[in-house]
Image (cartoon, rainbow over all chains, first blue to last red; front, top):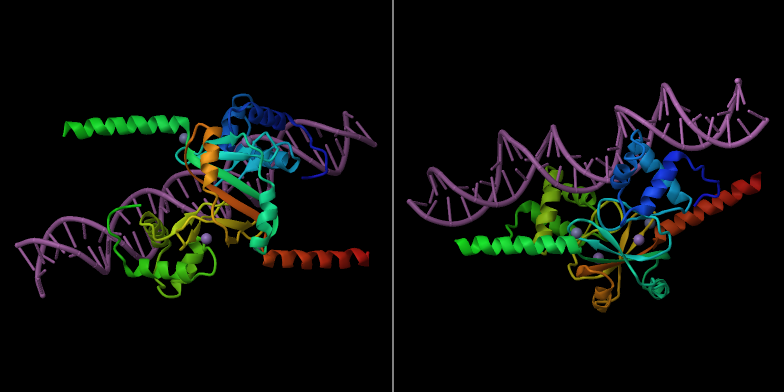
Length: 145
Length: 145
DNA sequence: TTCAATAATAGGAATTATTCCCATTTCGTA
DNA sequence: TACGAAATGGGAATAATTCCTATTATTGAA
Ligand SMILES: [Mn+2]
Ligand SMILES: [Mn+2]
Ligand SMILES: [Zn+2]
Ligand SMILES: [Zn+2]
């Protein structure tokens, strides 16, 4: 978090608005695609730079979930997420974080603890559906043999 | 996990041995550096390919912690880790995973839950020490003004 | 054994996500 | 309005990983 004031440029405002109105937790390129509809000349550099700046100023948070892409979240309060192991979708878990865990774990290692992350892994509804359809198709193929 | 038998080539054996004797949870390039001392002609492709194969056969596991690099673990039992936010070091947490969490969280989202991940974040002993030294040096600089 | 089919490897190119660089533009303010 | 600082766009560079392919090694009949 920086103490300097954040200059709210057109790009930053639109990026922030798009993250806030996004259904879920967009990645940088999902932010890019959304913002591009309103600011067609925006560059990927600006997206990444402004995402970082917005993080630094506490207007959004970055979710470093266990996959290759960063996800961004307009909700800056600490909270847990579920992640789809198939499509990477990230969803909120409506539960209060277990802050006592950090105290409890403090003695288990020689780290200076600053936080923790809990992630539920599974298949999102869309991927469950796709899975079922794939299995059904497979059964038909098998039966045809 | 594959059901086919794993052909234990020289490369795979050495990779496995090096991960097992590694103090910690090596990344792909740390495995590469270690293996290279014994098999100087090994290629990075083989490292990545064999790491994946060994995972598929349940001989190791891959840790997808919240950072850009994958870490590998010869201990295939489910367990938690702490990660240093400065240097990326990954350390075991000697505690039994809370399996009941998955059942408890099942109703909080519409995912088909297959697992969970809990990660403690902090500064490893080495980075704590470096931090302290940096601060001490800063104090001297400040005092000199 | 010998040979052919199969599997694995080395080396490098390609890909993906992200960061870096810099000339140009925009902004805040004097 | 004019100046210096901050931000932007566009593209190059980087880092981690995956993909491709010609070569090499292994297996298991014949
Ligand atoms: Mn969230
Ligand atoms: Mn471990
Ligand atoms: Zn999904
Ligand atoms: Zn560290």
